Image 1 (cartoon, rainbow over the protein chains, first blue to last red):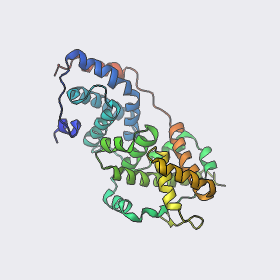
Image 2: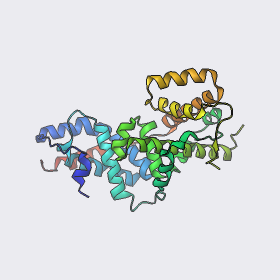
Image 3: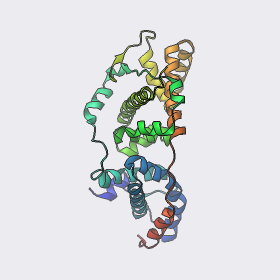
Length: 201
Length: 88
């Protein structure tokens, strides 16, 4: 696939930045997201070396395609989109992340209108309060990467559904259904942890 | 099993409410939707508890996940690669 097209989104606008402007955009609008990007990469790959490579690749691509970035716009979402594409194209193939889920099946179900059935999981607020970071991250990391990703983008990074749709190249309806599914899976994992730790009432 | 479906016997609007309260917690709800849920949970315990649970799970994600420190020198490694990249 043509990388440029993939990164540039639907409007192939070209901005003509000179060298100084390019470096300035890079320094002021891209690099401040290094910390968030590294952590996003880590939560996708679950490996420090892979995260470092993924982040370097992402910033290099961002610089290479800087003329398709409009100064002053949402650089964070733009960078996340590049990182997520690099992850899928370059890392996922060789990584040991859990097998892909059959979304079609999952999403057909959740997009259909019988979603007025809710999964309820017997999990209590008091139980959650006792959980430590390791248990929370283990629960999150045990989800398939696509489910993990929507939770990270929404809850941790606070992206809107619309931004998530752009970052992930999926329709908003799919963002909603994937999130719904991800949250139910996460609840189930948290409940399992709670049970195994003897937290339950 | 995780896929047990429950129509909550204690609240006829449970499914509708859960759907909307998730939108509220994600800042994606309309004003009408917010009013509906806030009024509803004042008098409905199961939905109130569900709201609290969903809210607490989000807080858990936000507050308990440790941040990995960025490897030392990574920013400068990236900068030096950019410096030698030709203008384009």
